[in-house]
Amino acid sequence: MNQQTLILIKPDGLKKSLTGNILTRLSETKLEIIAAKMVKVSKELAEEHYKHLRDKPFFEELIKYITGELHDRKKVLAMVYWGEDAITKVREIAGATNPEEANPVSIRGQYGRITTKGIYENVIHASTNEEDAEREIKLWFSPEDIIMDLYPVKVIILEKVQKKIWV
Ligand code: IDP
Ligand code: MG
Image (tube, rainbow, N blue to C red; front, side, top):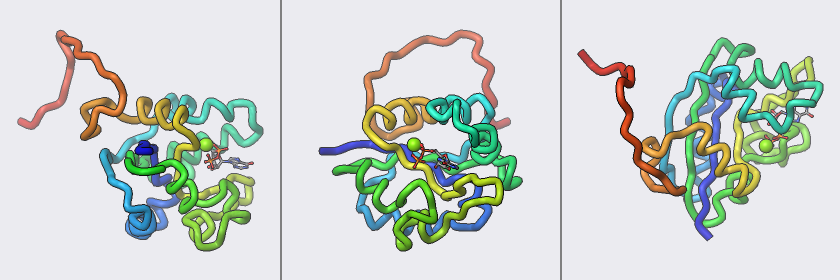
């Protein structure tokens, strides 16, 4: 079954100059990239993305991690991959959450580390299931950022919208 999944190259992945390596590993899945953009991650976006972990002792540090405060890289590369069994294929190649427990040839096993503060810096995010994928893709992307209509859309007319355009 065709599925879509959200992938983030996290600030440590960018800082370690791993973008190319990670994309090469992901290309082994033969899935299609249907959206990609650099995102400056606000605290609000980070907290919404990780809201299921709000009560964890590492939550505050996790927000600092994903917003880029720990890596002077206040951005992530956000992408949507699409194709047959996309969620499982990407999770498999990404590896387990804890980089020390991850398969050594997975992306997290190869490139992740545990910080002295105990955060799993595991270079990549990948959606866990279809429900999470839908929530996360809708959070990180607007319909017009994606080259397919993945979910139902509606058209609205906006008035007096402030927008930057090229001069
Ligand atoms: P996932 O990224 O494999 O889906 P989640 O449980 O959703 O794992 O956790 C989100 C992120 O929070 C992880 O990728 C990792 O960076 C961090 N994290 C999760 N659990 C722990 C933990 O027990 N200690 C430290 N960091 C953690
Ligand atoms: Mg998760």
